[in-house]
Amino acid sequence: MTTALPRSAEPRTVLAIRPSATFVETSAVQALAERAMAYLQAGYPMHFRGPAGTGKTTLAMHVAARLERPVMLMVGDEELSTSDLVGGQNGYRYRRVEDRFIHSVLKYEEDAVQRWVDNRLTVACRQGFTLVYDEFTRSRPEANNVLLTVLEEGVLVLPRGGQQESYIKVHPEFRVIFTSNPQEYAGVHAAQDALSDRLVTIDLDYYDRATEIEIVATQSGMAVEQAANVADIVRDFRDAQCYDQTPTLRASIMIARVSAQQGYTPARHDTRFVQVCLDVLESKTAASSANRERRAQQRELLLSIITSHSGR
Amino acid sequence: MIKRRGLRDIATGQRAQRRGLPQSRQQAISDLARLEQEKTRLQRELEIWQANQQRTEQRLALVDARLAQLQPVLGLHAAPPAQPAPPERLDAAGWGTFALEY
Image 1 (cartoon, one colour):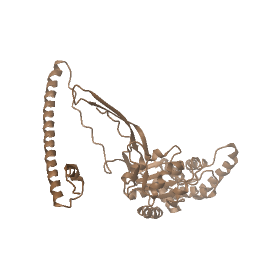
Image 2 (tube, chains in turn cyan, blue):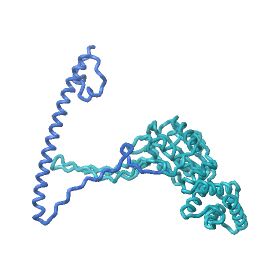
Image 3 (cartoon, one colour):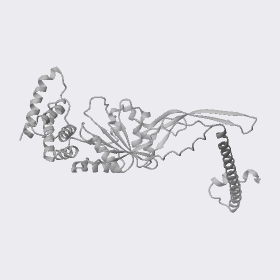
Image 4 (spheres, chains in turn brown, cyan):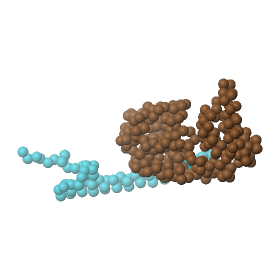
């Protein structure tokens, strides 16, 4: 008799990613995607690096979709360890055999062996899937060491033990796309040189005005002229450097989407629109008593920017 | 010294399957004979397995029929036949997929 095993804990689901109806592929996005595809097709791992709100993850997804392979997504985390990437011993396989070949002799055999479960990196290496490793610098560098031989020698080295194999030849169609934010200071680690040296890194910055306006308009459903007002307000505020957290394209989309849904006019005379701008953008400066004067100045600046772009 | 050939020099059925193509006609005939014998043995084994399977299925049907007769007598209800599990939605060569739009 063999006991029924629980359903395998291996990741049996892959992502089928595709662009949403609101995804905008401007010439800038297309150029970046084509650059990345050239490196990936040559077998190199890609790394999109840039501050928050520059579209790293979306671009990584877009490029992964263009590879037309199943995708596995991992998100870097302080708690991530090597076994979270490659897999580990997870539970036991218990086996009991009752042998009654001779009716008068009852023979029992029992044994329990540890059960190995592949994790996402191992599955992707075996099957030739695309691995998107988002914010990989949030994982401790030692957790990512296993990637070194995968990316250079094309071999995944597994911890020896039990019955599983010790080495896996990486599938020729396996590709990795990394993203990271070098400006983030909370909960991130520096990437080790050995790993960075194996990656082709493209630095992303905030998109040009035309691209931002198109993205804001598409994502919010706002008219292009009104979306331009919103994008310009956020871009000018970003250029003013009067904040603790950089206002990004997400802030523009937030303001535009709420305004479009609620029917606010993106103009100084519509106090509801002004309030949305203040809600979204004022929070970019830390709220503390010491900052009171600075926040007052920031509010004045914001109002003047809103007036200059939408006071007409 | 002349090497005496014995039983150890005759290829077994397993060996005849695994090694490369024989170089001499003598070896080829020996392997052919071995493999034909092995094929006959496996065919016979398969026939026995199939006969056993049929016999077991017939006996199982008889037991089921008898159980169906006895259960009403004891006031028991026969367990409903197990429904096959619905097939898992699989894609990407046997993998479940999760659609993600970006």
